[in-house]
Image 1: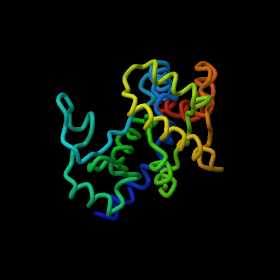
Image 2: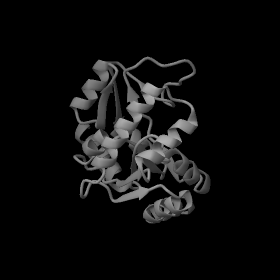
Image 3: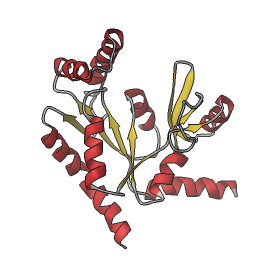
Image 4: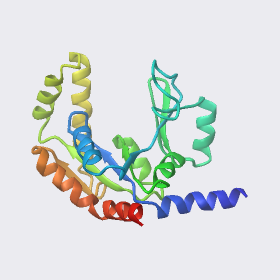
Length: 211
């Protein structure tokens, strides 16, 4: 049975709507663009639920906010090829499992993965075949202005985000890494570009729901 389950898993990844990998620094506008997509295309997109080894915070629900698992369980699934990407932050493991993506695809929805640059490079080594989109600010100065206007950062955390953004902006220029790089200096224009590259998959997902 195990080889059949494995074959089904591979086919599920290959035949469902193509996932979308969104990457880019905090403050570039990913969340705003995603909210517009979710509003304009109801029940077309879905988020995969990530796994983590950290403890749930107050109000967090297992299976909704995260799949909360032990380090041993997560490492076991990573070792058997069950994750498309994973990383460790502050002593806790985080990652995206193939099963979490397939759960979204099984509903004929386009799975959205909001992934950092390390995750993008990990997914490149899998058979997931997503559409890779990078959302970038027009400049580091514009990004700093946006982050300061949020008034949610300390000066120390702000500088960390800006340093990380500089690295992200530079790495995103690597040839062939992304199918599309959107410089978000005009929200309507950026949204139009995003819809254009996703148009074919959106039509497929909508067609499945009508049939």
